[in-house]
Amino acid sequence: MNIFNNMEFKKYKAIVYKTIGAAMEVHHEMNWGLLEPLYNEALHLELQARGIPHETLKNIPCFYKGSKLEKHYQMDLVVQDDVIVELKSVSKLIPAHRAQLFNYMRLTRMPIGLLINFGQSKLQGERYGLDPITNECVLLDKDMNILRIEDEDENEQ
Image (cartoon, rainbow, N blue to C red):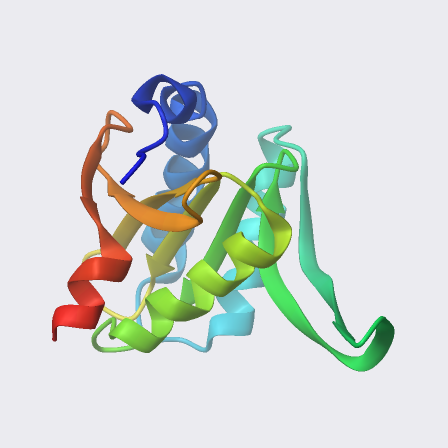
């Protein structure tokens, strides 16, 4: 197994910190348990107010045998062209939520993914990195250090 250098993930620490800070402000202002699209729009406004470059509801094109399909995936937010932000408003994050984020990371080759849940009284956030060599997603701590390889943990369940 060839795990990508931790230092590659650490260079995203500042933008991840700013993005999570913006999500915390949205959670503080709007509270918890509302519909996901409301949090998406509010986070868009908060990131905009903080001068953080981002795109909202960005499409990922999909192909079949070289032909572009009309159907596509849609990411909630992309921050600074490198960080995918997948928003949820659920009582509990489940493996399918992580798998959705991992698919987006693999399809786009974006190195960082954030899974943010507004569905509880305390904001939940998980950070992931994509190892471009193995194509595995790894759980990261707040300092952007690798904690574990997620794909292997899910396969063992």
